[in-house]
Length: 90
Image (cartoon, rainbow, N blue to C red):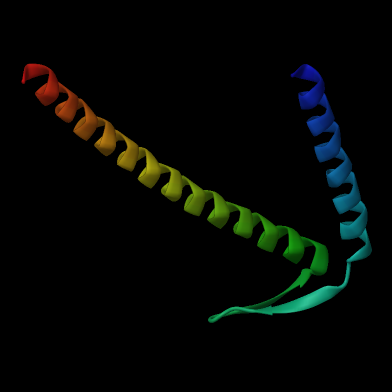
């Protein structure tokens, strides 16, 4: 298990280094138009921000899905326990 974790860490570090190289090549300024404002931002920063926002939204959706499944499991376990108690009594 430790080797797997080490390989995963090396893979993540390699991806971060590659992302750094790609980001350093995208130094052009691009205009960003908000509803109320406008600004200019480097392309690398814009890509990093949008990727981070996408990861956050994905994690929130995943957490909601997992919580819904856990609630369903606990509900079914309660029903199972209730049914098993009624069959033992009879």
